[in-house]
Image (cartoon, rainbow over all chains, first blue to last red; front, side, top):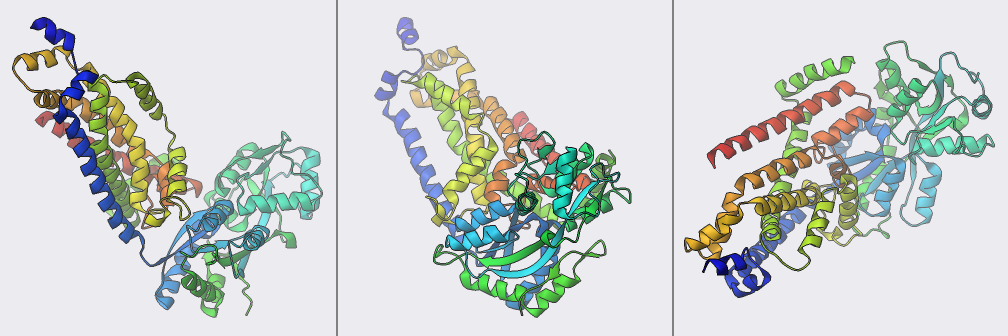
Length: 300
Length: 229
């Protein structure tokens, strides 16, 4: 008797086969679970289809507080609720291409036009601009202060001083690459003085400050950095005002022909409102630390 | 360094002033992780039990696969779940992208291997003589299986504690599948990532402390449960 038990030991394949209840129980359990899950999924589906406009935008519009300032007025005027995901322009466009959002508010004109050419977007409309600035250490080791952007970048290269790039396919990164190109310099990917942070704008500025390097930033983020440094920032604005530094923001609904599920009419209503008088005035009045950040320029 | 001190002060202020954005993030965190833990416990305990209790073909290989899945990077899970839930993806029709249940699916996948592996280990480590004793007492197989499961309850609780810790603190899935939408899918961890990227280090530390407080509460509750059973 004892021998028999020991030989049998804990369950074996043969045992399972012989005892039907032991096999049936887990099977029934799993089937019950599946039923519960699919019912839950149906509920989740119903809840997920609320009539709210979903927008993908860039971190600059969200981090500066512009959207939280602007969107309640939009909802009040039109009765359309809006949610937004703020991310790099590259990912924002990807979300549009995959039909996961209804409308885009981004700032990379060339990428936007490509996006429309591929049939993913439609009715691009320019809304406002802000500008980029080149910043660097107060003592300006590469001596770029007051130069044009092209001259400044050439000076950075010949001095081999550290330059920190976003390196994340964001609108700012795309702008920076366009500026190198405009200065007839191949993007210095391989150079030891060229560092790609792969992070957001503020971490990139912080990194440039630690490394005593130069970087390209939008003015809004620089204002934030400057105020956090309490009057003694280690990086200052050295080049500004060049027309190539203007940063155009546009609204663009996702093309309903490409994505039948998008809320195209609501997206169009959003686009109309953003280009309208009320929003344009609100954008012009928006201040961060007492400085105007965005200049409205929608075509009237 | 000032921001660490500032973080403690702000954490207190956020909680006491009932800051709506903070409580919304706390709510999102708790809802997503509760759903994820419920699903992974329901699925994971029976599977872990089967893996630890029975001998079957390819069991060792299966065990290695489960142990490997313990190293699933959260960003990778987030990306895979995004690919499944995107409008053009196989499950796009369900409309789960950028929702709390969507995050929960990813977190359940994160938690499942932990529950399975730790349950299986504690079943394997349970007293080998238990089976023989129960059998000699005349228990049938169903009773033996249930008694064994009961004997390893503390091991399963430990699995739940470990998995809860992982689920509460992950950021990759919440960011990719949830989209960090304020008032909707912004969890505490994605809020920390955002505040850090905005340079609001003090606020980031404050939110981190809030998350630790939640973990403390959960663990006090589980410790109470452990004493009772």
